[in-house]
Length: 347
View 1 (spheres, one colour):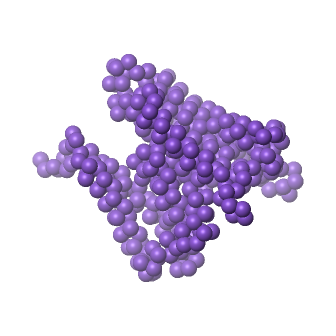
View 2: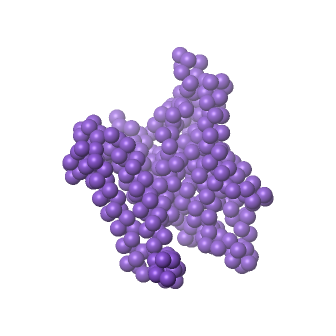
View 3: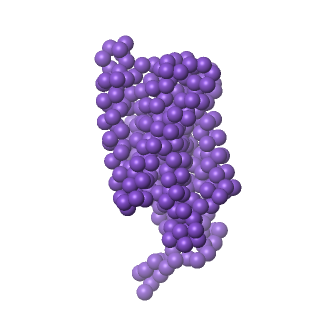
């Protein structure tokens, strides 16, 4: 058995295999629920009900999807240019730290939120710029460096929350001071948690799509991702494109930290992110690295998490099923992507 490249895969193959992957994911989820001793159809129904069954549930799903759209876009942008950014978690926390530094009273007035967002993007971009410079100058594998930056950033945030940024009124808890009123993103629905960070995420997805499809930079990013050697031969400055990609990717991931601090939490804690940076990889892969497809992909993943919490309480099934479900979804989707490009032949 060997793999043979497919020169021009059909539209049916490109669309059918990802749909088949989602179908296999549903079947796998049913089997997992059955093994857990629950009715698989009832379990899936409870997940859907918990995710979108009520106004509160639907808005909570949108709320959970907000940081996932940002981190999914960050990963999609980087992966499209064959820049393997595994450090969106570090960039998220860098954006959160920048937002807190400015949003606790360092600046005031109507420009507080825009300045905070720009500072957060700059912080996230700088965090990713280091690994990319190591890659372009010395050939250091960015998978390793970006992954290690996640742990470095968490240790740095822990130090800051126990030292310079610790809230003196926090009764000893490791958290930052609360953001001032001007530094808080307003709620979309009064009385509920959904904030305008979700609207910002939708705008970001549209802008990334425009960049990738309507600008020279987008063309260069796709060319570098498809074949760096051919792109270099054609006169495209590959290293410069990778640096620009890193700045955009890191800035997008940092907006997730900004939106969580400014729109939801109101201060910085070490558990700000339950793994949004890592989950962004799943979101981007399920979206096939398409920026607009990141939105429904993030909603799907957020719905699984929100619905699983409700399902766990109603059916007594562990919430770990949601993690396994997403893991299988990623596995099946990666396999589907592979089989759109190659076929298995004998000999």
